[in-house]
Length: 386
Ligand code: UDP
Image (cartoon, rainbow, N blue to C red):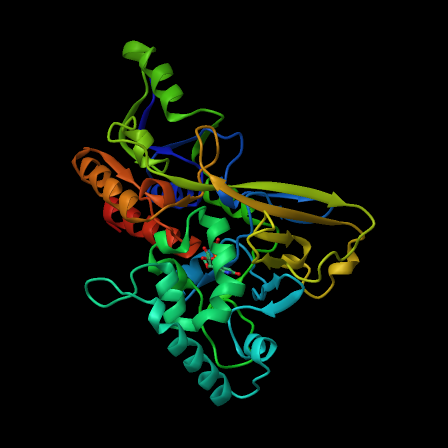
C-alpha cells in the first residue's frame, strides 16, 4: 500500500504542470496516462533530426509574462513566428488577413484603400446578417460576414471552417472566428501575442522535465487503474486527491449523454531527398473540396534559417473528423447543445469531492497551451497554498 497526495490522470501539459508544482511543494504524486507516452497532444518525436509534432502543429504564444518566464525556465525558445500561407484553388494568400492578403485579393496598397474595400464588402453582405435577439451576429457565418464581408469569408474562411468543424458555418458559434485577427499592416505574424516561439529540442523534453520527481505509469487508463487498485483490497494505494484531465463526460460514465469532440487524423510522411517541400511550416488549404485542412512541414519550426541543412523532410496532412470512441479527442465543440450539456457535467464536477478537473478535456474548453499552464498554476496555487 502506497500513500500519495495526488493521483493525476493524464500526462499532458495540465497534469505535468500541476505535478511539477506539487512535487516542488513536497507532495507525492502518481501520474497515469492511457497512452504509452507522456506529453499528451504536445508530444514531439525526433525523425531524422526533425522534431515532429505528432498531434499537429503546436506554436507557443502568450502575452502573459509569468507564463513566458515559466516556459523559458524549462527550455530555450527560438524566435519562430507563425506566418501561415493559405491556398485557395490556384491562389495563394498570406494569413492572418493583412495588407498582403488585401493586396492579393483586391490590388489595394494602402490601409485607407483596404478599409474602404472592406467597408464595401461588409455593407454589401449586410442583408445576409439577421443577428440574434441582442443584435449580435447569430453564428460564425454572420460574425465573419460582419467582420470581413464576402470575398474573404468565401475564399478563406467558409471551406476551412466547415472542414475543421464538420458543420455548416451557420451552426457554429461566432466566437471561433474571433481567433482570426484583421490587420492593416504588412505583418504576417498570425498571433497578436507579445511572446512566441518553439522550444528547441521539442515539447516532449519540457514535459519530461516537469515530471521529474513524479511517479509515472503509462499505458493505463483511469478505469483500468481503479479496477486494478481496488482488486488489491486493503493493500490498495491511497490518494488524497485526484487531478483529472481526461474527458469530463467519460469521468461520469457518460451518464448525461456524450459531449462531442472534433478530432484529427494525421498522415505523416518522411520524404527522403527533399530538403524543402513547401517553404513554410504551415500551409492551409481553404477549399472545401480538398479533404485536409493543412500541411505541416515540421523542419521549419526549428530550422528557421537553415531548413535545407537537413536533406530529408517530414510533412503531415491534417484531416479533421468527428470524434468516435477510440479516437484521440482534440477540440471541444462549443456549440449551444454541447455547451449546455457541459454545464450539466460541470455542476456534477463541482459536487465531486476531492477531484480537480483541468485542461481542454477536463474543462471542455478550447484552451491554448499558455492558458492551460495558467490554469494549472492557478489550481496548484489554490491547492498548495503558495
Ligand atoms: N480559420 C479559417 N481559415 C484559415 C485558418 C483558420 O477560417 O485559413 C478559422 C477556422 O474557423 C478555425 C479557426 O479559424 O477553426 C481557428 O483556427 P486556428 O488554425 O487558429 O486554430 P487551431 O486549429 O490551430 O487551434
